[in-house]
Length: 212
Image 1 (cartoon, rainbow, N blue to C red):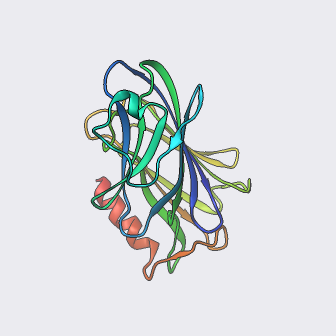
Image 2: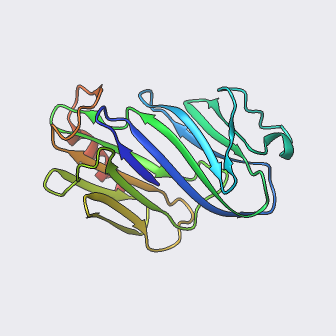
């Protein structure tokens, strides 16, 4: 998962999946918007090129394997949206899923930041291992002098490497595992459009309490 932070607090996210399939017609990822997030610019590609993007709401979960082949679309669900695309071909495949996540970074009264679950069980498949990289889209380095980072839900590591935040699993994801990353940014690193009339300290305290 590559997360490229934009100055307005949105992020261009690319998720690359390596999978082996021998059944089913589609993949999907469920994302809840929490009332403040939204997804646009959804794209899917595989080794053979880009998929056709259907209009939002046009994805038919009951369509056949052939009808879903080479296609993708956003399907509104309760509390969020489902990112869907056709399996297209059985066997060992690579899929690249791209989208813009608006409102990821919030501007809080004390600092800017986010607490977001990048990998969870709300998908048609569950990865055995995962890597999350968070960086500034403009190339400006993210360092421990201006950022604080935490990770929850998995057995692994998170650290700064060459100006990016790098989190990875060290054992297989299973059961109720997830990959949640929390980042606090000093004011001025970004200029988030989403403003929150509360402190990030509240977000941090709630997250740390939940991780216990």
